[in-house]
Length: 239
Length: 239
DNA sequence: GAGTGGTCTAGACCACTAG
DNA sequence: TAGTGGTCTAGACCACTCC
Image (cartoon, rainbow over all chains, first blue to last red; front, side):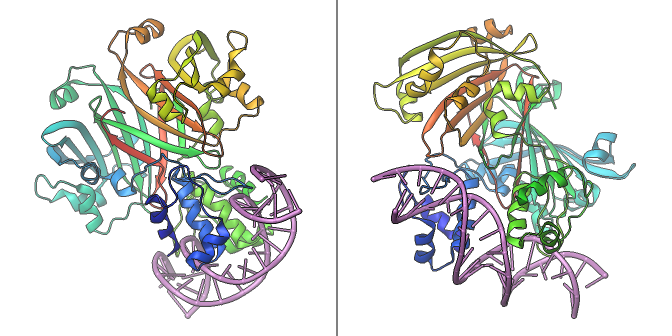
């Protein structure tokens, strides 16, 4: 697999701000074709690791450290990757009919049921986030009959053969409501950093909708994009 | 150019949640090779427009509307794309020696000068954001001798032949300081949505560093990512 | 088992950068 | 002008989905 080239570049083989060898010489060096080299480099470029420009060799960008898809979906996986101990306290876990908005966003039928989970998330012993997740009932069933506080629902779903493929993250500010204030220990009205996530399976079927509210100062988000390909949008107003 | 295929798909040729024709039939239909088709589809996939999965045809994802690179760098271009009238009021525009942090992030030499611009940005007549931008002096020179309130510095730089190629956006919450409170008309301590941007040219040379502070409720950010390629990272704590 | 996307090859020409 | 990345072609085989 030629995409292992990534590791060598990440290992600083060419230094920060250094120039990569030409595609042709990389191809020779790895014993693959130029097309394969280009595929590998396209990945690095999308992740903001190298530049790309006709006429000159690629340059290593010092910046850009993106996270795996898994870490972006699972608070537990993310916390561990940051060297923190993840925790969870379930406030409720119930099955109820989907609201109109939920029917829309999860592509359900009218009257379908969903599983709603509300949890406080901790780093160490400190609450940092309130997480409200909504699963279609066919997904929710997998986590419905679990022990009260399994750390990672995402891991459970993975093990059940549920495959996450695409996700969309929306980030804005929301004022803490009484529930937020009580569970996170902040004043009502405090501005919380909100991350709304929608994840779908490889066929484009919605698997999950969630709204996470982080205490200020506990988290920040970084996105890389280039003139060639962008995955970021800024929108007017609240969601 | 085969990438025009995008438009046809965006135009809803295959419907939302519809399935695309096979790569081979698209190739025939457009009179190009399969490799070309794959290149075009890779773009659509990165932007979250279609899924991709071995064994089945691609599916159109209803969601995902990303913005152009230009719109992400220029408040003016962005505001217009949202159907709003952009405005700006310059608070100051000065040249001074770079701080240690600025030398680092803009890859300058010790003692180099930078141009710092502080502006309130408006939509219609309403202030929504306070923008602090730092340019290396060679870039700042292009906007230093301008009329007091040119709307878009980015447009001016474009016209001067400055090419933006990559950017990195970091998003978090920051409490309004006295300057923020005064210029944006909010209470001191209010949580503002902060977007820190770094942009580089095609060679990886830093062109700009900026910190934008938005009033709550005026803006939200959306990122798409897939298991194959991610450009998003969540980090612990403040920047 | 037929059809699909993922990966790879070996070549070609072009647009651009930089000396 | 030489070297580089961008685009494209025409083919091959494989892994996977779904009937």
